[in-house]
Image (cartoon, rainbow, N blue to C red; front, side, top):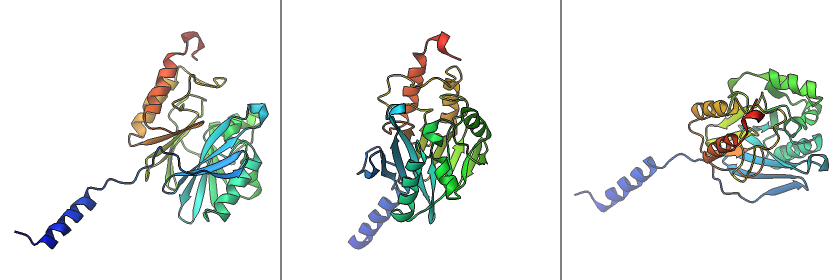
Length: 253
């Protein structure tokens, strides 16, 4: 029979070996208010969600994005609605988080993603996007990211993937493998959404197949952050699919 001390040691070793990897939580933590229309909170180790509110022209709509720590620096995902939002996020990352933003990427060409690009350009911080995103932003008169992404690549601690058209023809997904956080942007709807929102540039016929490619490419996603409102789990993919089934066939394109 093993001595009591040896038994305790074996139990401890067994518990450590069976401990699952850390993943993000859907439980919101305390928010830090950077301005009346800019908030930030930690959702996983090294992963922060930023929420910026549009002005009244856009109905004061809140939009999500990420700041992800990358060694001694960080990466900004989506830039807020305007340069002032982006400046507040850059200042917080540098002075409070002590991980200054070294690069940014945007997930599609709309203003809730690209609006802060001029603030990053002014500080010499490169902003990345797919070629299609840059082209569409320029055509729309929105700020244009200066650097390019491929349809599937690693970007520091992140993985980016173009699943196909959905909310827009260019919508990009961003995954943080270390924590299982998938940022879906406006391609994925939050649990409270009753419809698909702005369909001006959407391809609702292609969107279901694009969702299936997203599932296949990121099967390890545990927490999903949509482009607007609250984060959730993989059920948000199913909720988005359900909303797509409610779109009249004549409205699909």
